[in-house]
Every structure is written in C-alpha cells, then in structure tokens.
Length: 65
View (cartoon, rainbow, N blue to C red):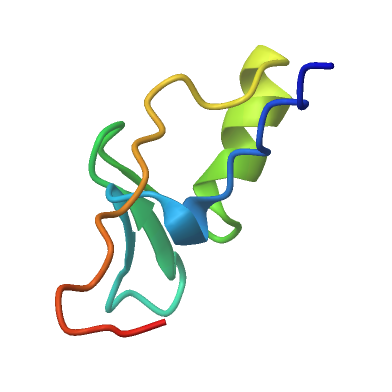
C-alpha cells in the first residue's frame, strides 16, 4: 500500500523565512513574496494546489536523534 504524500508545510521548506516586516511577517524566497499568512495558504487559495516549489530543509549537521 502506498503512503499518502506528505503535506507541504512552509516550516519544513528551505525557501521559507521570517521577515522583519510586521505587516507581512512570512516570506517565500522561491516565489519572491511576503504575506500576512503562511505562503502555503496563499498558494493553495490562489492556485487550488499545494506549492510546487517546496524543497525540504536539509537536516542540521550537528543534530543527533
């Protein structure tokens, strides 16, 4: 049985960042925009699809699990 695809979430994407703009605190480097909400929400509402530019962040080198 196939596992369902993981939900795209900005927090786990390498393009996501927190801005210094209080009006638009969340940003996406890949799409070059800032938003009041998480970029994934704006992308889903405007296109009807999950973000196609999602790239998982690399794991921290010093982290031990």
